[in-house]
Length: 54
Image (cartoon, rainbow, N blue to C red; front, top):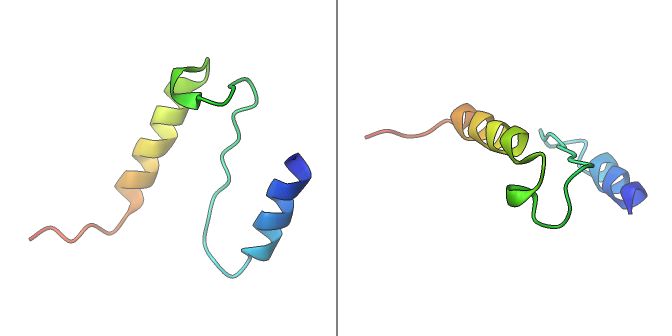
């Protein structure tokens, strides 16, 4: 499974992306032991977007 993630990441070289990995969390990361880090990462991503505030 992990190999598929890296293969996908390799295919996306021309696009800007980050791959976040939460190895201690199961299927539902939002309630797993790494949920705080996940929330921090999502917030950082949202804050990095070029929002068009009108």
